[in-house]
Image 1 (cartoon, one colour):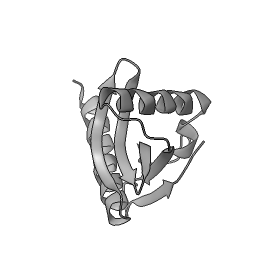
Image 2 (tube, rainbow, N blue to C red):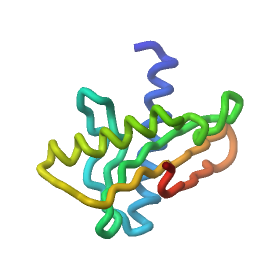
Image 3 (cartoon, one colour):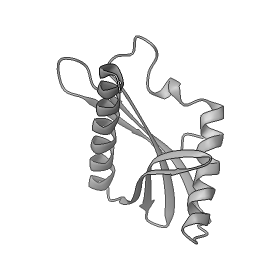
Image 4 (cartoon, helix red, strand yellow):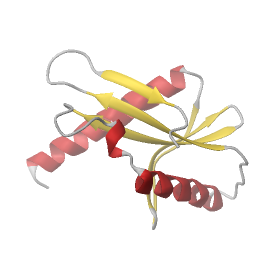
Length: 122
């Protein structure tokens, strides 16, 4: 693995840790992290009361190439919905209320990280 790939992987892991901390502090329960199947990967699966939450975490060091929010388009949103169904099937569950959330993490080279939780992105 190249050093840039290692740095990117570490940045993503940092963002996912911070996102999980934020969501747990808000009362959500983490059910799964980095769950993978043939359709793709879910960064975080959580329970928010009776709602199953499929959460995408996008971490950036700057907005030079767009905000974390802009990285989740219609195709990604559709894939996240399909992944939510696949996760339920794999775990023998059928939850009527599923929500897709985004946690955007901006980790600048200097200063504190900015973290935003966007509920129900689509």
